[in-house]
Image: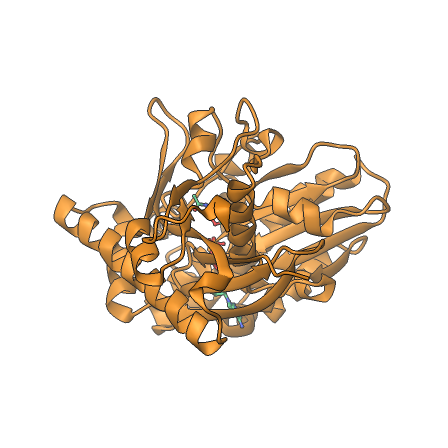
Length: 380
Ligand SMILES: Nc1ncnc2c1ncn2[C@@H]1O[C@H](COP(=O)(O)OP(=O)(O)OP(=O)(O)O)[C@@H](O)[C@H]1O
Ligand SMILES: CC(=O)N[C@H]1[C@@H]2OC[C@@H](O2)[C@@H](O)[C@@H]1O[C@H](C)C(=O)O
């Protein structure tokens, strides 16, 4: 059978690296052919961390970051093609998310900003690139996020069970899949972002491997209650958030009354906060649906053994597993989803779910940046 290759590229809110996934859409279900992650160069990570921390920049720096990210994505794709012996001509299109530097879906002038010049990516790879996936949904009144629930639905929905796909990246988001009901999906709140920032501040490590440091501390119930009182958590969907809200400045305010707490107790409380802010949402679903319940975790948080054990303890009536056990490597679900979003763009298929983002209608997402030859992606 003829292959139908698309590449998805994702660099998420954790700023840990650039994920590249090659998907084949020639048969259903689509298959992941190969995937790799490239860590962010330290200088770029530093600049982006600073930008995400306070949103302060100038136009020169913003433009340069846009260029630098475009080059990085192109390098990652070209290295990927070389490593896996794939010619650019074999790939119909690349779906590239770009780097979210600010997400502000509420307010008088809602916007979401992803950097990374897709013109550069197309020019340097020789492959047609599709980018700017979120803003069409926003133009139709949606949150512009999360976009992966439609992809989750296609891969993991099953009539005999309630399936929830939970992505634990810097931010966590869920997709609730119950047959014959519209998909529910939203950002539940913080994923790894606060645990990452806290361990970086106190121990100079970029993340808490397997949650070992968190496990060594004690959860402080007063602090936990204050974290859980964040209004975003009880806001009704559609909703989406980011590191503009959940950052060290937010945490510092909550810690003001807890100056005597040890750093590892704070980490333990942050881990519990990450788990509970999702678990409370899932418990509410239990009243609504009597089907067997499956929680499928993906994203870097799926590798945090301590966090996964907390989900199992807190959700005794659920089977807790990872997407990897159900056919798609948990590290590459988002990158695979952007390959699928590119595929939808080329097929002119709508890919947002109004039940999730709140958009007025389902629309075709993504802007096409054609490769240099002028050959249309639709002619391949
Ligand atoms: N072995 C591990 N133990 C604990 N945490 C881990 C482990 N491996 C990865 N992580 C966490 O996963 C994070 C990366 O997750 P991921 O790549 O899914 O995030 P992202 O895609 O950048 O975020 P988002 O989905 O919000 O855009 C790391 O920053 C780290 O906190
Ligand atoms: C604005 C933005 O980049 N949002 C990301 C982020 O990372 C996780 C969560 O917050 C999710 O809403 C979204 O990414 C995934 C890929 C999505 O759109 O489904």
